[in-house]
Amino acid sequence: LYKMKRMGSKQVLVPTVSCLLLLFCLGCKCLALELEATQTATLKVDASSQLARKIPDTLFGMFFEEINHAGAGGIWAELVSNRGFEAGGLHTPSNIDPWSIIGNDSSIFVATDRTSCFSRNIIALRMEVLCDECPAGVGIYNPGFWGMNIEDGKTYNLVMYVKSAEAADLTVSLASSDGLQKLASVTVPVAGTSNWTKVEQKLIAKGTNRTSRLEITSNKKGVVWFDQVSLMPSDTFKGHGFRTELISMLLDLKPRFLRFPGGCFVEGEWLRNAFRWRESIGPWEERPGHFGDVWHYWTDDGLGYYEFLQLSEDLGAAPIWVFNNGKYLQILSYQ
Ligand SMILES: *[C@@H]1O[C@H](CO)[C@@H](O)[C@H](O)[C@H]1NC(C)=O
Ligand SMILES: *[C@@H]1O[C@H](CO)[C@@H](O)[C@H](O)[C@H]1NC(C)=O
Ligand SMILES: *[C@@H]1O[C@H](CO)[C@@H](O)[C@H](O)[C@H]1NC(C)=O
Image (cartoon, rainbow, N blue to C red):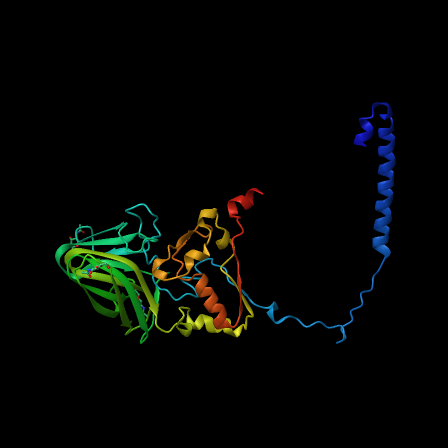
């Protein structure tokens, strides 16, 4: 019709053709409705074994999505949240949430700086004890993800990196959220050197509290730096860092594939915050971690590409790695 309009001399044709078309369409419409109303169809299903097709073993599996701390804080057994003090960003001093201090402004001063021994996650925590004699001890604590589930008789492995110019005795404890009930406690002597030292300690709980916290305190004036503080139960699934009770439930599902790690987690709200598999392999202490800006929380990527492959193997499931194809959520929402 548009073409005819432009032909000038044949302009008169336009209304006529339009009417004819309209009538034709209405006619078709009526016909179609009539057919719909009267026609019936028979569908025959041949379920004979000759025609049956075997459902592939790999049809049923699991979709894992990093959302609401399903990884660290969920199936991953790490108890410390923000273990490398990186969550507050690269500027210093930064917010050390959810870490907090034990003591007050006149007895302790903490701030982040860029003195870590790990170049890819350079933020460390500097703790200055101001009181000469602090009988109860002052320091820092971490409540984990909604509190740590510390169970009677279980062993917990602590790993942390410390640095102190002067020798110091640190007390590492597992305590109730108000600090009053001590479930485990060890003294960690720190030699006075200019070097970072890796500390490894076992803590055995002599009580249960589902909302516990990890405390690191000192009662002597001085400065101690901390980085990459990790606490894990010793009985993880096959010793690979996953929570045994949750993985046994996954095993019951007999998954033949495991898809990971997301979801929008893979994309990021912005590409700079997308999950990078290369930065989630190798020694956990050296992984930079990243801010998952879609679900708004920091992840240290201790549960990374390598660990997901390990879990797939342990579950007897084929790994299905979801990678970023260059898209991120902000771009998708404008398309
Ligand atoms: C800080 O704590 C100490 C020891 O508990 C106490 O004596 C002091 O009054 C406190 N200072 C402030 C400013 O709250
Ligand atoms: C755990 O600690 C909290 C806070 O101190 C306390 O209220 C609660 O009773 C404790 N739970 C157990 C089982 O001891
Ligand atoms: C500190 O580390 C450097 C380099 O690894 C080493 O040469 C030095 O001996 C260490 N110093 C101490 C006191 O451990």
